[in-house]
Length: 266
Image (cartoon, rainbow, N blue to C red):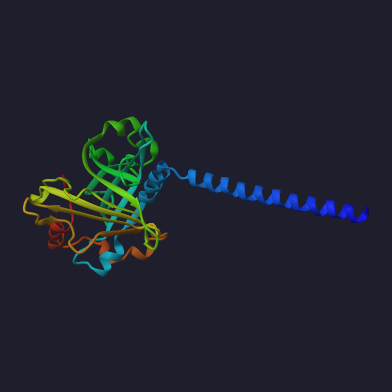
C-alpha cells in the first residue's frame, strides 16, 4: 500500500506541474497580447505631442557653427484638444535674447495617420488667426490665455503636413518624417513651395529642417547644411547669462537671417 500511495502522489504531482506550466504559458501569451494591444495609434500621437512640448534651444549648434545657425528658442505647449482627440499645440520660435518677441508662431495639430497610409502620426501646422494675441502663450497663466474655444476659432490656414513613422532599430530617433516631395505652397522670399523634415530623438531633441524653393527648384530660404537641432532647456540658465550669443546681433547678422531662416513666412 505504501508504495502504491507514493506512485499515486507522484503522478498527481506531475499532472499538477503540467497544468501549472500550461497556465503559465497561456497566461504569458495572453499578457503579451494584452501588452501589444495596449499601444494604440493614439498612443503614438500623444507620444509625439509630448516630445514636441517644452522649451528647447539650438544653442549648441550656434556655438559650433555660428555662420549657419542662430541660438533660437523653441517653445511648444498644449493649447486644446479637438472632439476627435487630436491635440492642438501652440508653437513659437524666437531669439534666445528676446523670447518675448517670437518671429514664428503656429498651431500644430497632432493625430494618428489615416489607416490607409504607411505612417504612424500626422503633424499638421496652421497659421494663427490673431497671432499677436498668442505671443508667449506658454509662459502665460492659464486664465490669461485664449481659452480652448477661442483656440479652435483661431486655427487658420493650413500650412504643411508631415507624416511621421517610428524609427527603426539602431537609430537615435524615435520618430521621423517629411512633407510630401512636392511640398506645400509658400511665397516667402521668392519661394513657390516649401518642404520640411522633422525627427524626434530619444534624448528629447527635436530636429527641424524647413526649406523654401522657387519655381526652378533653387533654394531661397532655410539652412543648406542641415536641420536645426533643438535640445531641451538646461535646468539652470546661469551659465548662459554672459554668453555672447545672448546679446543683440549686429545688423549684418540680422540681415543674414533672411536667407538662413524664416522670419515671417507664409
